Image 1 (spheres, rainbow, N blue to C red):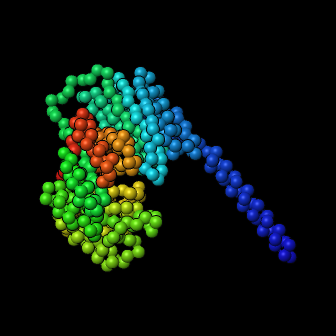
Image 2: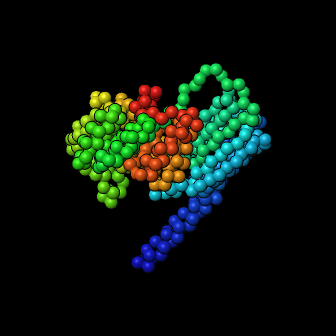
Image 3: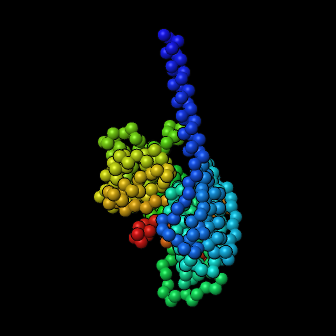
Length: 392
């Protein structure tokens, strides 16, 4: 009898294994055909009508870019495109950034084709496409964003630009926040001396935090509270004194946050330090925003994790809110920081505004000295973060 039971178990296991193998084969071997949302004609059919994508390759940026470029070139054979690429890293993971530039005979047609590709890029590749087109100036730009890193930066021009309209458009705006301040007054003075409107995020409860805050306020610089919050890899990463943790009760979290808010004189807002664990917790973010309500402060989501709900919860609570676009100095190299500035400029030109976050490194200070000339050449304006709230 025991032998029969054992034999029965073996037969069942083999049957389940065979079924799993068949299902796996069907999933891996399946092909997904991209279908357009609407019936297209001419150029649009070249992009979306015939292309098949292998399911296992859908998240590959090279496949996504090849798909997009093939569609563009089929749709407009005279299109000229140059591209270069570079592997970028933020210390935790790497991605490829591609720069495109080209010449198009029809800005409007190219913009239409890109609009048609937007849904496919989002649904099939998990990329967001941001598009800005100005036919009157013969220019078009777009970004492809993977999570919160930029994969593609592209600019196209028409060979013969049409006359420029007399109406002067609003200039795109760019804001820079310097995090992790409060340890050194000398470091604060170095960044305050830069000839641009920066916003400074200061830690609570450090020995020099109040001195640094008073120094900036005396020079009419905008300061915000850089509130420590629990990261995913705590306790390997320590967010610092006064931090907010998921394990706190409602009263403990409220008390800790109030202490931080009341610690610094002259703050106009708050952003998170670390917080990849806490800012992804919707319940805790509701509690954080309940404390922040009624204080006449804004919240800037540093977006240390793509799943952060802090920005959404701030808006839901009626708190003015913004979110970071690019960390400018994850790689402490002046040349690479300048590259991040160029990405910020492109985002500002496409969206109308962009926010970068940096840190009080010597390399960041050196690179920031180059930023005013870069934005002047690009027609972009450097502003304080709170100016973006007014624009919004």
